[in-house]
Image 1 (spheres, one colour):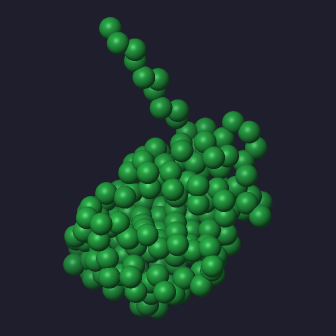
Image 2: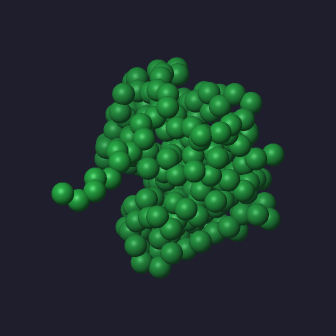
Length: 227
């Protein structure tokens, strides 16, 4: 019999906030900051527990939550799309926070960063407002949504990137969100610590859990979240 690997650590805490199901992972010592992890369309919080666990290794507390229309959270996705980020981010109390989102979650992270007082953001293959809205109206996003309610957010257009350090990652082989999206977004990143990394090849999900790019995002957030 070979040695068995230990079971992954479960969340330290779970709960509900404004009808949103969340799970929190904490470092062994007092956290330097918090990271809110935002999943993509049709995903759920559990799919990003691996990223949350790695955040704790850098001294960061991490929360994953089910966006509306996903997992165990209440109701369809609606006009609270960005406000929900602010509500869950409040669970970190006075800790400085960062956001890490992929695909739809990348769009949400960029759009909610200012209101959530995020000090750093990682956005992976972020979708556009137009593509997001079109997908919702066509019913092909893989989750329950209220198209009229979401339109009140998406019709504002693309979110203006926050003036904080942003790490923008995109695979140029992305078959769902074209790499042109991030190429257009990169020049709008105004903070001098921001970085855009375009990775040859790959596909829409190839960067989300790749160990090298998870490690890169952890280091980026650990450097720029603490104040």
